[in-house]
Image (cartoon, rainbow, N blue to C red):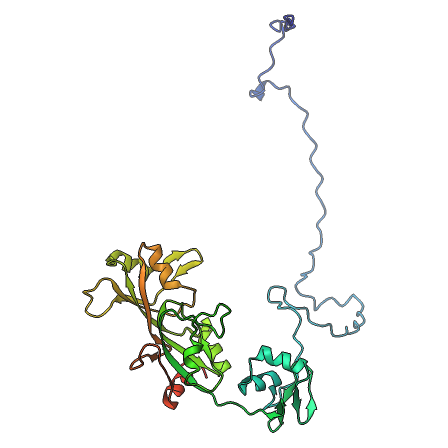
Length: 331
């Protein structure tokens, strides 16, 4: 147990003399007067430095040698990196060899690269194995002793039936949309975009790769129109929620137009217009709101409709329809 330590007692300060009150300075002893400071002699007025014309007392300075021109420094705030090296202008009419082969309908561009690498393609009688080789108009391209010519660009629309997948080939031997289009089309065409296996309606095919790329790129905002059949009536508040945008796992799902189909009496049939290309976007919107999509049919795509095309059939677009399609999507 620690011992109690006694604090030392403070000294008694009661006998100290009182300190003078410093606030009252009247009792201070008189201090001797300070001697007056001597007067300073008058100084001459300083010259006005703003007027340098009268400074004739200084010798002339020699002219400074001119500095060589320095390269201008880039503005750090707007500096965009080193300038790109200018490429030589492209010669008009040149086209990649793999694209020429693909446009002839032999195979895709990727498969064409394999044919070139294997030495199976000749240009003007010479075997070409160089990747990226370009041909000029008038060059003769041969594959297996057959002269390749550019294939005519065609566009086909199909009214896709249910239980068909949108792919060129399937390893599981399932029904594909190509089984239908190959019955009437000799050209090698590809589907533009895709529809789910259980989604029906308009599907476009073409062998024009540049146009297909434009139609599927999000920046062009291709319009798509669907009719969705739900398992129960869709409430008005949920219709408004779709108009405002539904927040899904991969972001906000936006729809341009949504309304009940026809006379609006059947609350289970909903029409939607959108330009989003997200996978299964319509089904996921309704599943998020507690509905099940019983049927989904695409009735419009890029200004085209499936009018007068029976389910499971297809037809060629005429020149007027092709012109409108290209005019509306930047080509």
